[in-house]
Amino acid sequence: MHLTAEEEAILNGEEGETKQQLLEILVGVGKVFGAEEMVPIRSAQVSGASYKTIGEWGLKWLASLDAHAAVPAVLNPVGMDRIRWEEMGIDPGFAKKQLEVISAYERLGIRLECTCTPYYLNITEYGDHLAWSESSAVSYANSVIGARTNREGGPSALAAAIIGKTPKYGLHLVENRKPGIHIQVEGEPKGADASWYGALGYLAGKISGNRIPLFSGIRPGRDHLKNLGAAMAATGAVALYHVQGITPEARVFSYSTEGLEQFVINADEVASLFTGEQVDAVAIGCPHCSPDELIYLASLLEGCSVTKPVYIFAARDVIERESEQIRRIERSGARVYADTCMVVSPALERYDRIMVNSGKALSYVPTMCGAGAVIGSTEDCIRVACTPE
Image 1 (cartoon, rainbow, N blue to C red):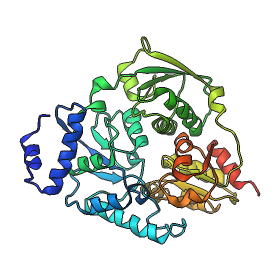
Image 2: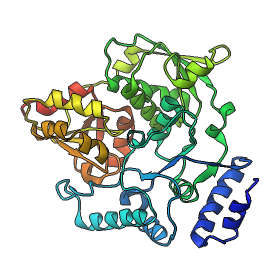
Image 3: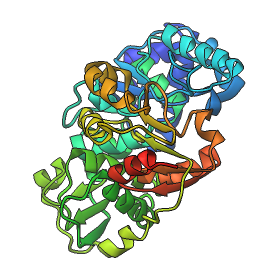
Image 4: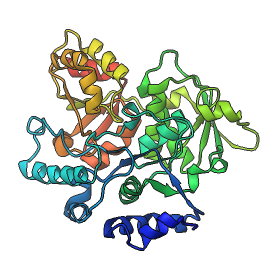
């Protein structure tokens, strides 16, 4: 790799041991993937924030670091709502360790907005170079915005936040962003909600693996695209996808399907995932809810008293901006939590079967929470939650 004089100085320890160690991580990643140089980034999003996933070793490593973020950076969801953790039923011992993790990141200059949807917080634009780590956030940034980021690991994302740069390889290069397969969708339902696109992504991720799919036959909106990409990142390793006539790079470059391997997914295959099984709880917000999704949930819950636990997750900044909608939602008995989600919090491990409206959650809940997962539309989720026992 070619390093600038400033980067060489950091690598030689002239700006402290922590920055030296973190740049060594980035240079090591760059060499493995054949990067020729580093590229400045506009923002970072750091995973490895839940004590459930990083444990004591991760906490000790964070506590050993002494530096400050050079670019705007936020955390991925942690294991609990930082304010309402007792209400969530979180063990005090876990809460103590989680707060230590959060404090360690705060000391490093990472913004304590613990979310998988950083694109709702900071302006991110087409062509921006980023170092984001959460799979659904990476997919959204690359696909829906047209920014450029690889899926970073927790340490490399933190290193990029501190250094302000990341190795220039993979999806930072335009030539690596072309589609590798074509998925034709047949029978897209009129008025399908985001859960349908999440279910589509659940199937498409298994087909795609780590290839970049180009979709035709669908006309999704932004929340639909969010669910589509999140699910593909969970069941496959899709960090970028294109939708003909919809996503920015598919409009700029007008990708042809000629020569691409062809797959067809029809509406019946997607519908087969919606089984309607009985559940113990409902969880919505994987990825975190958008303002529009909170408004829709408030309308569905109007006049309802939930009979099953309903967990709704969103970024704290979004929750604060939509305070009236949150009051409407919580009047029903449903609860809206910040900072965490159904996947990384131990709070949902008490349930045997959970209904979700997300293909990502359908994939992750069984392994991360030890519970069965059932996918339903957002309307189905609220209907189930409000049905008398």
